Amino acid sequence: MQIIHHGAVNGVTGSCHQLDINKQSSILIDCGLFQGAETAGKTTADQLRIEFDLSHITALIVTHCHIDHVGRIPYLLAAGFNGPIYATKATAALLPLVIEDALKVGVTRNQRLIRLYLKRLQQLIKPVDYEQWFSLEVNNCDSGFQQAKARFNVAGHILGSAYVEIELSDTRTKKDSHTVVFSGDLGASNTPLLPSPKSPYRADTLVIESTYGDKNHHNREHRSDSLRQVIERSVIDNGIVLIPAFSVGRTQELLYELEQIIFSQQHNDMWQSIEIIIDSPMAANFTEQYIKYKDLWDTEAKAVLAQQRHPLDFSQLYTIDSHQDHLAVINYLASRQKPAVVIAASGMCTGGRIVNYLQRFLPEPTADILFVGYQAKGTTGRDIQEYGPTGGYVYIEGEKIDIKAGIHTISGYSAHADQQDLINFVKGIEHKPKHIRIVHGDTEAKQALADQFRQLLPNTEIVIGTS
Image (tube, rainbow, N blue to C red):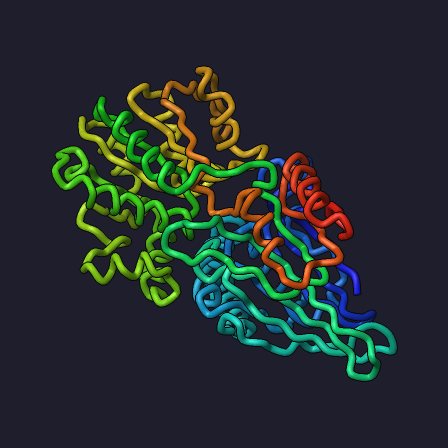
């Protein structure tokens, strides 16, 4: 058994890990798109090309449907992959929506080609319930493991997200079975809507993310109060607040907490009149799926529903669909004197409708940009974060734009586990790992987490994954 990384080792994007069960059988865990600084010096074709051998890949396991974990799937299919794609039922429902958008943005607008890709994808997807073991195909080989099974467990990152346990065994010998756990992206504890992840009983080898391996978030009460305060200060001049957010996960969490604030501020005229605008058809589609799969919500969110409240569909919420309406909303907001909150993708400002908003409102002193998620190195979002507070500038689509808008960051809104969450995940494993491999993080984050794990488990081999 060995693990080969095809992404998410020099940063946080392009997640794709290959588990070699024996010399004739391998499986992939995720197949994501590279973004930000990790695309530097590479052509689009280089970023998307599947350069590893697929001849022994028998299956793809998808932990969740963020683009940095699934964005290269169309290229995997084009390269000849023809095996099953295992995902939780909610992820299986969301995945075609994500892939369709990725095809339109990065590959083709040809509807016939898109339909063919999606048809093939649907044929390969195998939805699986959480905590249900499923068998993986293993080709016969004289050495290595001969059987493999896997199951998904709640990761709490976005709807349908999972970490995956893979149990390798060989009935021909007395060799002990070996359990490999791939964390995917673990959710932060005590976040709205979704349950927090629970540690597996056993992990002989653990491949774990480290996005916030060197940081701890503000607690939820602090972040919700910060959200309220930032918006109240920002709209006092009747300006708008722009929130770049991923269409799946972050947007729904924001809606949940904005509804909570509006409900708690029933006698505050500003909060009762402010418009919450979702300018993302994809986010609207994902929100429908969140509502459809409300049985996966946590106890608190279900209690809100029981009060006849609708945390993802309330009266002050407006959704923008067509591109024409999107452009009209920008002109409308620029010409009026009334506050509004606009949530739009992409979350790192690398594309999508948020770009048009930034081009129009970054130079406006009455506008405010609120970052609620990780901004990878080399992305427009990171540049705005770094240069905006000092009155700098940023280039968007080749245009130099002076930043006069207010720039704010609330770190506690990350959907990723922080350092303490990651440590607690390992602490909770009853049968501790003999080997931990750290991936999906910047250099400093991976090193800081490795140092923590070495203190916690001095007899465990701790390595930082490399490609």
